[in-house]
Image 1 (cartoon, rainbow, N blue to C red):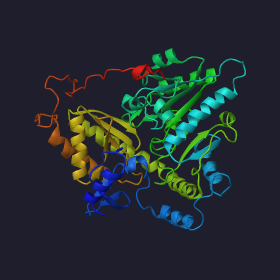
Image 2: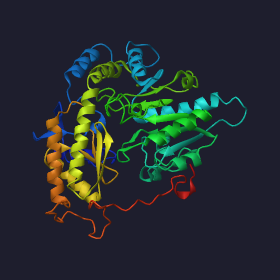
Image 3: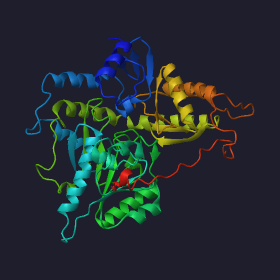
Image 4: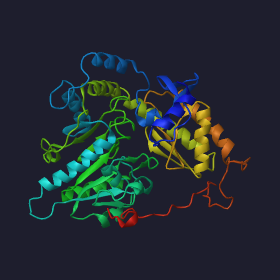
Length: 446
């Protein structure tokens, strides 16, 4: 089936949940993908952070073939040989004690929310109403199911489905005073991403995370950290929270865990795990023999890649910062390791840059309208970073203002000439208006 036929068939038969790029991929190897016309693409998106080892990795292929010929599924009513081994490896690198396996990051987050409420109820020894409030962050994203949406701080995802899970309030991102104001004895958990992914690659502030940890420890509430996008080596450490010197009560992971197969997990402490007992939670497919065997091999490969990710991440960041010094449209460069972004001053420019890179055979994506997100495979080399930087330079030259003695305002610069600028001449986007998420439309309070 060719591209046109595929588009026609999908339009007729699939729910319209994605506005796909008009590309039909047929194979991949290493850091490259090929489409149905034979065109090669440098993959700096990794299937949104999933293909951390690239495509068709030999070690992953070997395990897949071997395990598919032995045992694919048993259900969780019986034992198999891989769940315990995978849990042992994950608890060792995370500093936590126990694991629950599921099929996705969203499922892992749903499990974390249930566990937080269950733990609060099980430890309510004073006879009063158990802790039940959840504090999440504005601009966050935790998934598309009802519990995950309830803790997602972006109205565009929430509004079509209100009313959502009650008991959730939103704290302004990195705002210590707002966290102090909203935190009270009814809070059972503070929920956050170490680095907001869909929200635009925004690292949590060290002081904010420290305060969240202090408040939860003092009150007996839990700290839930979503590392679905930032975890498992993406930042140059096993987990992004390890850059901050803290340990959460629950952490959720997924994306690269099974190298492209659907597998998620929540990791927690013995203390918090005491809130669960058989029958309270479960999954049919989660933690099956095939996905767990592949995940074990992924972790073996990851052990030798952390230093490389950290090194290439620093180089990539410095090159993006150099690019920022040349273009007025680049508002900021941010991220950790190989989870990086540049924010532009116009959604139109961001969209145009993504399209131009696609035309040049480079895959990135746009998130939060104006942010270009880079999530390359961990196996990239310096030459791949250089190729992307050159492509960005070409695309930005054709769409934005070039800063320097020969600066020209190009056709693609969609900002007003009277827009506020920094001392360096960079256009500053106006501060976004804060819309309260602590009550949804139609009066549905969550």
